[in-house]
Image (cartoon, rainbow, N blue to C red; front, side):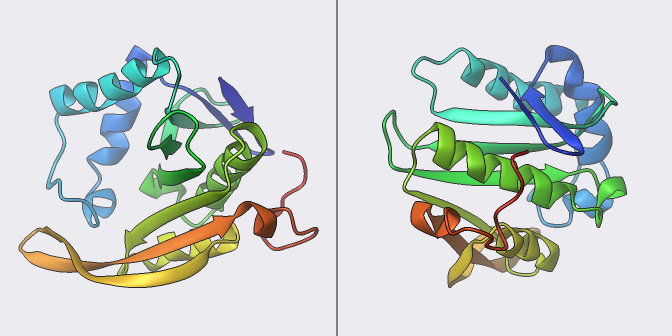
Length: 188
């Protein structure tokens, strides 16, 4: 499976992608909002192994794709959508981008493509996502793809010696279909 956008190619993971993923997941800026304090090669290979297994599921309920910058084949992030069960009407998206590529709109472009896939290809009614409340850049991505803030979950996550609030966002299929909304992108 591949999804092309103006600047990105979202594609299935391959075994050899682990080195690219380890490179960006080892960056302290990346680790700031994750429970991990560091990443090792075996951890990342196991992490990617989950995505490789999901590719073989039938029916498939999890689509986690590697983000590459066109035309460079190296992985610079990940974006995916997960359904709780086959035929579910709701999905949850998640994304990450290598810190060296932050601030260039790639997270928004990838998330927008995944929202489009969820509604247009999977026939979903609702797509949600969450982020750590302190991660303002991630919250902006969700807002740019047309998601609405539905709530703040106080002290939802605990790691790195503290409690973290999370923000819950969602968009409904009919909101996504509104012509020329801020979340609509040209057919990409």
